[in-house]
Length: 107
Image (cartoon, rainbow, N blue to C red; front, side, top):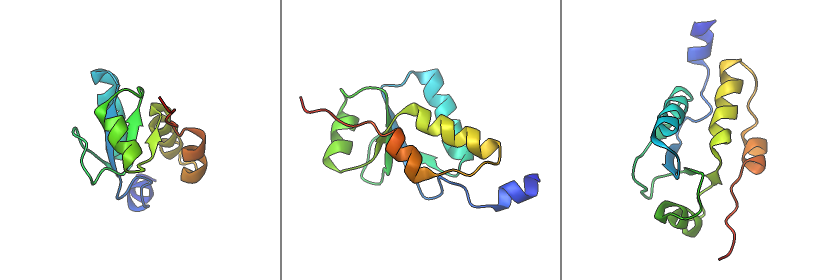
C-alpha cells in the first residue's frame, strides 16, 4: 500500500506555497504537510509562488498575491488536503479552493 501511495501523483506536485500571518509552529506543520503532498515552500514571496496560505490580510505577501492574482487560501486548505491524502481519499482541488479561498476585501 505504501508503494502504491508513493507512486501515485501527489496533489501539490508543481506548486510553490508561501505563508503569511501564521505562527511559527503551525507554519512548520503546514510546511511539512505541503511537502508530503508534493509541493514546495518558500519563506519569501517571489514570482514563482503559486499559492499563498494566509491567516491575515495585512501583509506585503498578501498584497503581492492580490496584485498577481495568486490564489490566497486558508490554512485549513492544506490540512483538509493532507487529511484526505493520508486517508487515501480523493481530493477535489477545485472544490476545496472555492470553499477555502481567502477573498481580499477592498480597504
